[in-house]
Length: 336
Image (cartoon, rainbow, N blue to C red; front, side, top):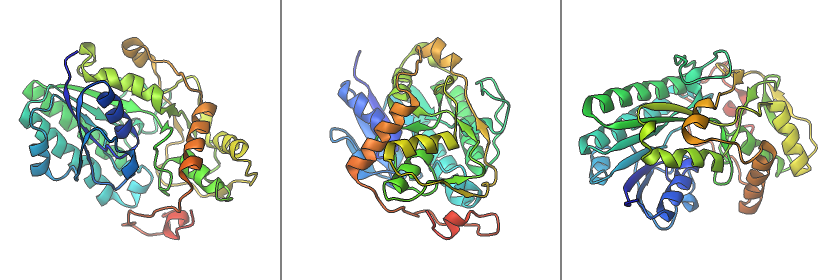
């Protein structure tokens, strides 16, 4: 296969850094962007062209888009719960940043844009979620992702550019940001427990989720580079055979860390979807998806990564724009 020039956003983040590394190892030319809001500098692969740049900087993004064949737009401020209380920042970093990337890509007439969306697009519908469901977002983050999807489809269809929308579900594994107090429930639990602190759970802990290990996600996203039958497809990526409650996640983390402290239960977060479970039938059909890493294995690998890298204090680097009686005390009072 002829090497391609690939632009990846969010390259200091979790998914973006892994994609950049894989594509670089495959011989492709990779240009990576990140504003370092939600990533780690040591996540950035050494053998790529890296730019510390905000995706909203359209003029600079246009310069870097020259001769790019495929764009993977992974950058996001993926804070679903926080978006209820910081809607301006979350919407700017998701919707406007996405439009900037799509605009520059369309202007350069790239071959394909792969957009990393979110399971939040489905909202609080009957599970399992399937791709033919009409999106019903219930919070500003989800709304921003669905709106970005609509603009992507509109611009690409008008200009004859291929598009793919990937919908990964709760990815876990090494390189995930674990000092973010607003997201990544497993990493938050492990970082706290390695500091001898009890896990924090919102609500009764019976919320159900499916978690996808990073390698299983990558196995689906790499072929999105140029697999022809993926054009104009929306595809869920994640296990549909292993749904788990947050209480069960806390139990697994307790067994791993040996920190036997009872969870601290806090009141429900507003707009939180209770049951977020996907169907992977379409990913199996188009991408031969299978779950190669179990939840227990995935959590253990995440645990080993955090232990190896070292625990960190939580970084409240996004300001709460709305503070009222609905705002979780864990965020308002920086209790995590």
